[in-house]
View 1 (cartoon, rainbow over the protein chains, first blue to last red):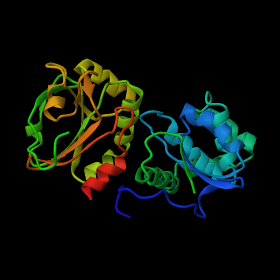
View 2: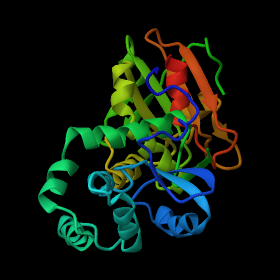
View 3: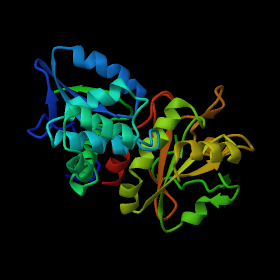
Length: 147
Length: 149
């Protein structure tokens, strides 16, 4: 890999966050992006294998980095898409107390969630997706590729 | 669009804080000039936001990034604050678009610059330049890194 030079978006890998069955779609999305929230309902209604890749743009949506870390941490307890769906379904409640309420509803461990979402591993995982999007020429979200 | 290999035309413009900034200030360093149409437009907001996200990687390559549009320093200040970015924004305000014209980026009839990236090398020459097909789309940050590779 050579920094952020152009490269095709990576094919689906074993540690991608994937749901559904059917044609493969890779979605670069920002959890703070209203367009992504609207599109997410349509995308997930399709009979497709959907991979969610992180593309938080903090300067446009300051809360995005925290939200992407939160879904990644939820994913470590098997609740990645449950948290994504929850955040996109209610964009008006995304502060920390709202995240804790979601954690409780999803039945995942809060203490572990709090540690994981602040970990370097989670930050690196989110950044990895972001960088793959940059290399693939993503300029706005949602950006959808067939895989 | 100005051609690679040309001397980059020097200029002095005011930044978002009203301070004069000249291209000559960057002698000995690489600087990426980002000509864009207008503060607060949706695509310009996306463009400067994405480029802000990769500023650390640009800095690793020894590149400073500077935005230039026909907006005033006051508009630049508000735009910078709205986006929460620290990218220097220069006001090509009076005479309107004179620097964009010198870099052949100005769109006559529209009254602003097209999206044009100009990488100026340490000696003040244009190392690379890229102009978007239209102001409605912006070059991905990957193209900048391709030019630096």
